Image 1 (tube, rainbow, N blue to C red):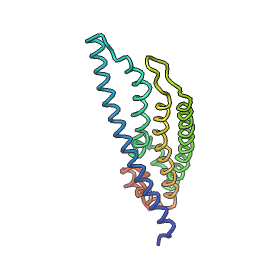
Image 2 (image 1 turned 180 degrees about the vertical axis):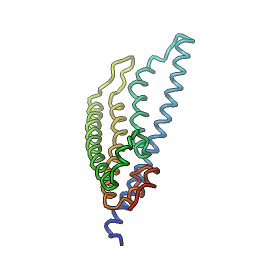
Image 3 (image 1 turned 30 degrees about the vertical axis):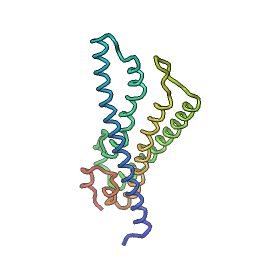
Image 4 (image 1 turned 90 degrees about the vertical axis):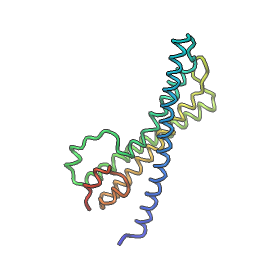
Length: 195
């Protein structure tokens, strides 16, 4: 029989994972739209530059300082959630499942700490850039806080995803069948999980 507290924690973890998955999906839509905007304006800039000798003078600054950051940082957490990052499975397949879950719990806890620090420091930096009206020197004085806030907004779900994975793997040390339910292993790995 399942202890009532354990099922309560499972409900909280699963609800948190669903909320985080929704945020990651919205971030991916924004990342995709940003890529489309980059393509459209790059084509427009090339046509205006070489066809009419009248380039978009502001485009390069917007592209380099805002738009390139958006799909890059907003996609991290979604990719981690879908287990889309490169992984070397040779050693993990050799390890006993509880040992693997313990090592992954420790690794993701460390990653959570690093990304949480990056999130907080970047958010603080964005706030100070906003308060002090920091701008990028160029044709147009673009505010710097936007780029810094984009980084913080992209790394925040990544740090929360690492925390979720850390807790999920820690719970799976004693009960490996929890890993697929908590979505901390890929679909391929979930078939290998055995209680």
